[in-house]
Length: 176
Image (cartoon, rainbow, N blue to C red; front, side):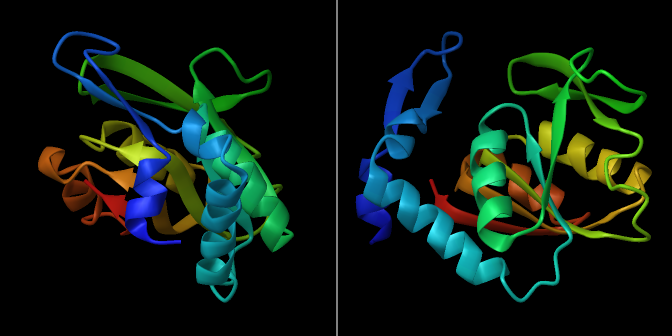
C-alpha cells in the first residue's frame, strides 16, 4: 500500500480539540481492514529482528497499535496511561503538549522484573513530542531501554520527532 493510499484513510478535522489545531483522526485507518492490516504487517516486518521484549503504548491510540503489534510479535504489551488510571504503584512524568499540560504514568513493575528489557514505544502521532519524551523518560525510570519510538504520523513542522531523536531513534510511517 502506498503512502498516499494510507494517508487517504486518515481523516483530517480542523479546529479540534480547539481552534487552530488540525486533528488527524486515525479511526478511519483502523476501520479500513486493508490499511490497518498493512500498518501492523509493515511494523511487524520492521521490528521482527529488533530483539524486543515489550511494546509500550501511550494512551489511548497507542494502545490500539501497540497491542496489535505486541500480539503480532508474540511479546508483552505495557500501557502508559494518564495520571490516576493505573491501579498499582507508578512512576509519573509531567509534560507539556501543544494545547496544555498533562501527566502520564507507568507501573513500577511494568517490565516484570526483566533485567534491561528492550522496548519499542508506539503512538499514533507525534506533534511537539512532549508526551513521547515523557514516555521515554518513564520507560528508562522503570528500568528498560527504549530502542525506538514509532508513530503512524509525524507532524514535521512541529519538530517533535527531531527533539525526541536526542533521546531515542524515531520512526514514522507518514511524515506530514
